[in-house]
Image (cartoon, rainbow, N blue to C red; front, side, top):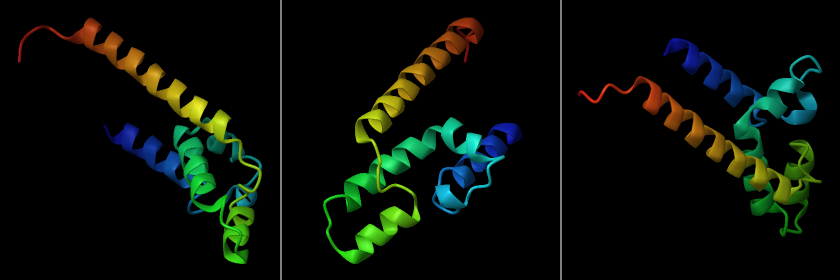
Length: 101
């Protein structure tokens, strides 16, 4: 349980909210691309600020490295992660559930 919390916390740090993608060191950038939270966060930021023409919105997207976000790719990866987790949890329940409470 503690290992899962540590991994999830690390993925939150690498998703780009606290440390923007351009500021993530080269040796940790793989954590950004591996983390399933990164793609949902990028889709959220794109949805919120893409149609806004103010300088602040442009600055935010540029600061977080999301000025050229691919919304279709992000949503496809989020959906694929949901399906993968569903399959994984179905397998775990099938394999380890004993039928008792």
